[in-house]
Length: 286
Image (cartoon, rainbow, N blue to C red; front, side, top):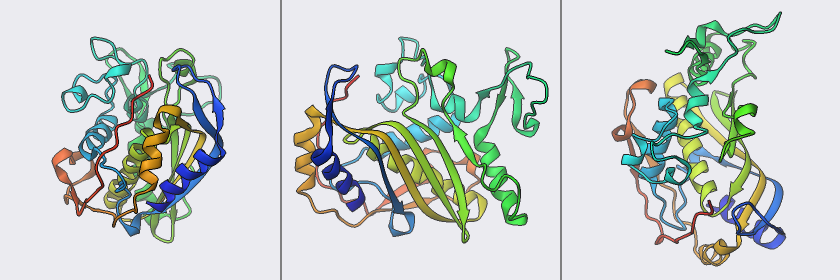
């Protein structure tokens, strides 16, 4: 994908050296932006082999709302470095996507969307942000001027949790937009690892947009991505230079089973026509 390779070049050429908590320095730029048209193919990088199955398992884990990786780690190891021996995480994206905690006692005058609120076993009230998005998108079909038209925001960022977490959300908020019958998604990411993280984020949120579009009767539009601290780790530079030598191939396509959104699973999403270059190994900075 040209958009991705352009980003790699830009950060390599303009990045400023920055020390990090991992002990490996980065080349960083501030607030990089790109977007891709999902009608041109599924944006899974072809200039290196991507682990599509791992990404797919991860997305369905997000959608499950689980706060642990006990099930996920049977399929992929990508979250092992940030969990304890019991598989618990200090921060789990899906937990906030599907079960964002609400105050049990609100302040005077506050209102909550009771339709999407449920009470957990311990009495904690939580809000299902993904179901809210689905219901709002369906409402727009019959009421294009609904007050929620520009309020389709999902947050994975809880300030009190983020203040203490080993790894608070990197891709911390995303919002949807309907324009000319197409569903668009914009993701904001506070910290973006260009070599390892961004290709997964791009593939994951593009797929989520396509799944939601199918469920709610829209065409998939564009995926847009703002990366606040956009960086390349120094030990990833040579691998990315190798990737820049490779000419992007035709993007693959996705075949999604004709099922309702919440009944979809791993076996219902098929990747077709994917012919990438060989993989490039990048070490994870923990």
